[in-house]
Amino acid sequence: MTRASHTARGRITAMKKRILAAGGVVAVAAAALTGCSGGAAEATCTNEIAKEDATQVTVWAWYPAFEQVVDLFNETHDDIQVCWTNAGQGADEYNKFSTALEAGSGAPDVIMLEAEQIPTFTIQEGLVDLSQHGAADIQGEYTDGAWSDVSSGDAVYAVPVDGGPMGMLFRQDIFDEYGIEVPTTWDEFREAAQKLKDAGAPGVLADFPPNGGAYLYALMAQAGAEPFSYDAANPTETGIDVNSDEAKKVMEYWDGMVDDGLVATDDAFTADYNTKLVDGSYAVYVAAAWGPGYLGGLEDADAEAKWQAAPIPQWDPENPKQVNWGGSTFAVTTHTPEERLDAAATVAKDIMRTEEAWQIGIDEAALFPLWKPALESEEFAQKEYPFFDGQKINEDVFLEAASGYSGFGYSPFQVYAYDQTYEQIFAMTEGEKDASQALDDLQGTLETYATSQGFTLTE
Image (cartoon, rainbow, N blue to C red; front, side, top):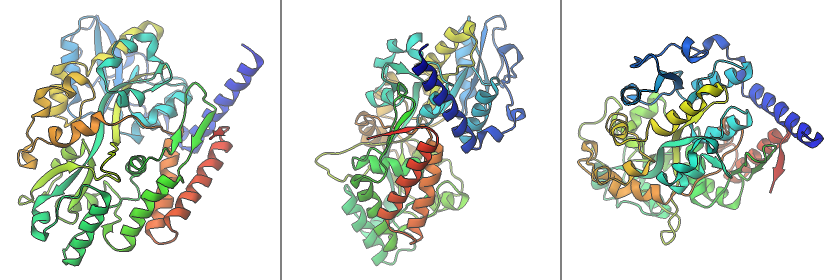
């Protein structure tokens, strides 16, 4: 190894430690690593192992109804068995994984990750490059956008599972009551909001959540913004452009909506927010494809409500831009013993790669598939949703949104970026600064943080 290579590796190691410390994840007690806390032989499985003599692969995942998928895999494989644990959802799991990486032990063989977290864990040297384990053989089974989100150059760090192409869910009964046409552009969206307010409706058209990090960046991307760039092949470099003209255009639009009292500014996914989603306080829920499942699962929904789905409004209807909010993957961790690497890669690639598994994922977990045989099936396109009065929402909205999505770049410190975005957008919605100043301040904060962690900023 050359001196330059040693220097680069030292920078990456120091950078990794600073990011871990800044995120607070090192402070999470190693004792919190419940379940698969060592080799497969030591793991505590939530599920039953069907074939005790087979190679056991430990998996962390939080999907609804996932135990049914695990049982299906184990019943149909003689040489590999999945030992599954739910180590928590989102940040709870990520903190445990980061702690395990720092400690050098305790990570599972396979882990469920949101696509946006992949750069963070590649820089922590926590993910195996699956291009060496047959990933190229299955690339054609996924959309280009989905594959872009899990790869960097020739390297592939995860296998796509479900996605969040975006659309608009709306209360048809409220629209009918106030004579509102379904908006197809953001200008029409504002007009609809104004009409609802002028009519004295008890609610507003929609919510603009300051804490919706991934949501806000998806809205920016629809206008052509590229807030982040990162290439795992150049791990000490990152690009930040959160205050571009395109990003400011979007935030100025919403800032104006807030100033004019046309939208709410409630934090998303709180108990109060959930209540307002289903009691008519918001007439529109700009949502990802997993939104219908989330919405339909909320308690105290208005039984008289009439929900429908429509495409997300566009800035330029002649040149529509499709965007994605959320989506998850399966990755193989670098803590996997050499003798289990191939088995772990098989689990990551194949556990959600059958029609039977996706029948469970769609019907029981309300997932939106990124695996083409399920995504492009006639059954999925024609599926009728009782919550939407029998509407075929996939055919009408989400399939086109998924096919038009081309991928999105994330930061190697995405959680920190979301935290800082929340602070600035909250200040904007509180009237403490305008959209332009909020994004300029965010740009400065993120640049300072990146350089303090050892990154070189790229154009």
